[in-house]
Length: 116
Image 1 (cartoon, rainbow, N blue to C red):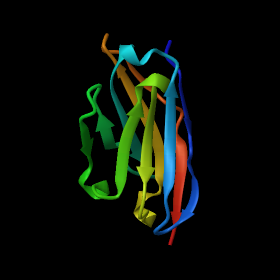
Image 2: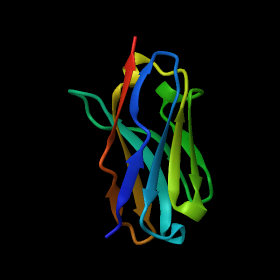
Image 3: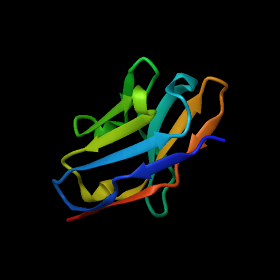
């Protein structure tokens, strides 16, 4: 069973920055894609950003130019650098890891709150 440990959420003013981290308890060689999702109150969970094993990235239109996803394969860790934060970025952020045997694992979620 793969476990994911997230950290880095918190309260920040609009225009500020936060960095989320998610570490997986599995060798990076077993991991294909890693991603960040978010879910705001009353809304569906949505994809924020993803990164493949080769480093290809994809972003939701709402965060392009403001968020950067990266991964450290030596640490089996994925990061989400969030800048120019807006109140509408307020949500619980979840990391997702997909392995080469097509299993999917989710982190426990970390709250990000952006005040106006």
